[in-house]
Amino acid sequence: MMVSKSGSGLDYTRVVTLNQSAAFLIESVQGKEFSAESWVDLLVEKYGISRLEADRDVQTLINALKQHNLVEI
Image 1 (spheres, rainbow, N blue to C red):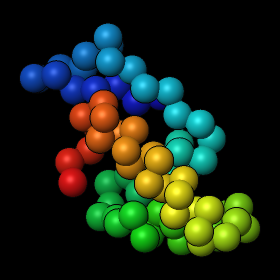
Image 2 (image 1 turned 180 degrees about the vertical axis):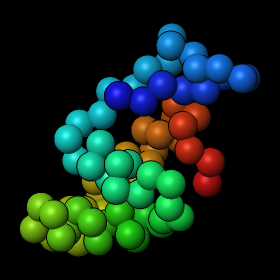
Image 3 (image 1 turned 90 degrees about the horizontal axis):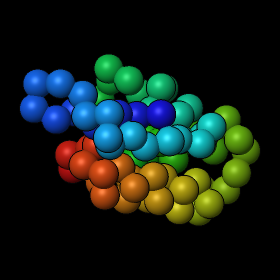
């Protein structure tokens, strides 16, 4: 689960629930610089899926995070 920041505090009216793989990606890069490509690499390594499938999943996650203003790209 992620909670959006609003001003100086957290906005608990804006909560986004993450599935297991999305939580894994976010936890894996917390406090580090990362790219969409590094997220693809992590999914391929952990779940043994194709790069194409991993890339689609990463783009879906990024779009959802952008939609909720949880990332700046």
